[in-house]
Length: 242
Image (cartoon, rainbow, N blue to C red):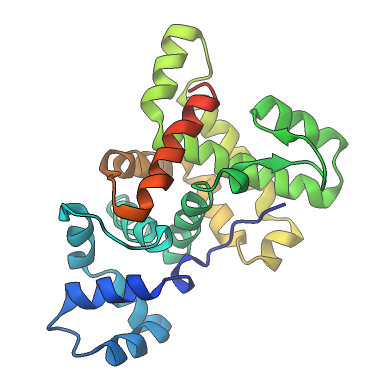
């Protein structure tokens, strides 16, 4: 099973660095200087928090050739800080989750190596009963991620289906996601993958996180290679009945 980790910031591409360099000139003298800054964790995080990067992404009218890792981290970090979620690791994890979920195969959960994809929450919850301890951890983490993704990026679709089709409302997603993260946070694998603190914050502040992502969802734009990722998110919402 795929495990989302808080490692979005170490996956930036050469195109991302070029974008940063172009935006921050003349504050950064050269590519070599920028690479050195990004190699140091503390200075890297200060660079990435520069508001100029956010504005450059949102205001750019042409195709941007940047990675989904960079794109989502900048936007997630911004909306989380506005909501009082200042831990970079949480923004890193959620940005990586969104980047992973832009890949259809990464979004699928399979119970076992050759198991059938579990697309619906009732299937995932049912699979918990027969799963071993390790598999239960991955299922709970996935339910938390899936709940946050759907309620964070597609709240209007959830509200519409809840009102006109009797489908679960946002409160259901919040309670399910929060409980799933809290159930996973104390597992030994949460410490192995260094996500215990992230799960703790997401579990306790799920609604705040979800609302922050609602703001991000309103800002999603088409930017070159990221176009396919955004399109897939919209297609996925339809496939899941949202």
